[in-house]
Amino acid sequence: TSIQIQLLNVLDILEDELTRNVTSIDANSFLNK
Image (cartoon, rainbow, N blue to C red; front, side, top):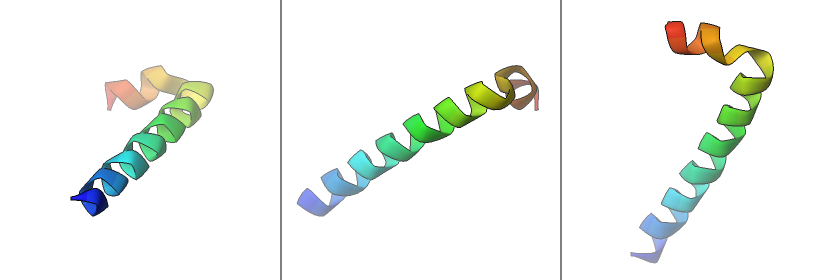
């Protein structure tokens, strides 16, 4: 449904933001956990 598509788009955006934040902080320590 359109609602599911919207949720997927929001999740993609949040994931992109988290990826940028983690990378700027310390991606290695995050991945090693």
